[in-house]
Image (cartoon, rainbow, N blue to C red; front, side):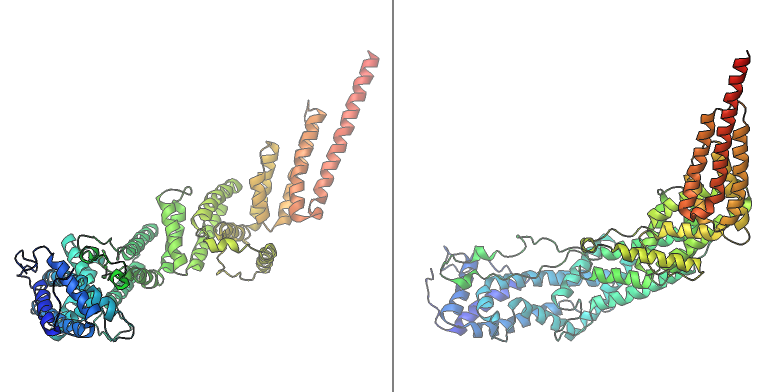
Length: 581
């Protein structure tokens, strides 16, 4: 394999140093065709690789070789950092382009050097007992120190900070984004991107970007919260669009790492000599793979958290209190633009710990709309039922909780806990005490609509009139054989059961008398009518107990007996007439 023997380290290093300098010289081809004509049948890269292997494993010169290479790499890094000149005062794009050009060449040269000296990396730099860093980081550290000495790091970080602000404001172009990506890769390689536990000093780009983003989001949120127009629903829609756009931008601020292109880096297996008995030869250095996005992917969750904490959380409660009512009015069904805006607003409220504000706004709005219907005095029961059906469906869907995670499936709810909670809430409402609105019930939307309706129909000003109107609605439904399921829902809401019972009893008496005195009515017709009445009384009994329907049940029994007596009298009369004839 090797046609010559290494005699002295100094002579060997002079030869290797010339190779390294050619790799880092922008004006020189490190592998000209006429280099080292003494070995025309041996690839030059292969020869360098074999020389390094010989130095490390045969001559045991790894410490000398590492120290000499480290000095040369630092010198090359300083020289390339000097190529950047003075960046202060230049345009942002010019700073990013100059840095990208220099680092692109230096990084490629450093990768080639890593590939050629991989045996040194494996045998010496990766030995935990040695106080030595890997070759890649020696070169990167030298470049960083060269920039620090010239004050170039601050200029680059400031340019990238301004680029991040431009991206948030929607003013960045594709070329600037491409240059910014390379700038971020550069900072990550030099440990200038985020604060770490090592001795690297700032400025750190991530820290500055997060600080600017926090201030920007807070200012934007304050402006949105102060904005008041005649259309509060439109304001809420704008807020939802703005916050979700900010969340999306923050989420995609850092793209996932790109796939490593095999053509961009030296293939060490092409340089190495096949050797089954040399375990160290199988250790391959893995260069740092940079992210493809403008910011590192690890920054995206931090930006998302800033949007939630600085933009959304301080303001979503105010937006919800003003905007939920108009959005509910605009929803004809659980679909359409207004519905999805309402659903998204609740999602933001849930993230911002403002569910109580949503409950409060929903309750107040439903109560106000129900009061308007009650004051109209026109077909009150039917109007309230239509209102509850529409708003209940919308609220139940829009304010539904997020889908459960896999961990939630393991925690089965306890039936007795649920029952105890419902009983406590019922007792609290009956006694006029406040119910804890911070409990995020799974179906709080529908419950809030029903409770607001209950409060509205039991207001002192309208409680009696509503009970009378409800009794009249039952009267119409039972006279025309309509379904009473919806009316029973309203019956459960009213607390003026005594007023309802008095009016219902009066209407029941009239209905039964009309059935009894109707000319041509058959006994079966009367039985059907009484059965329908008793079906309604069964529902009342289930809600209020047997004492509530005692008198009403007695009236039905009396009507049934009277009907039977009338039928017997009619039969006897027909029989007498038949005998007389």
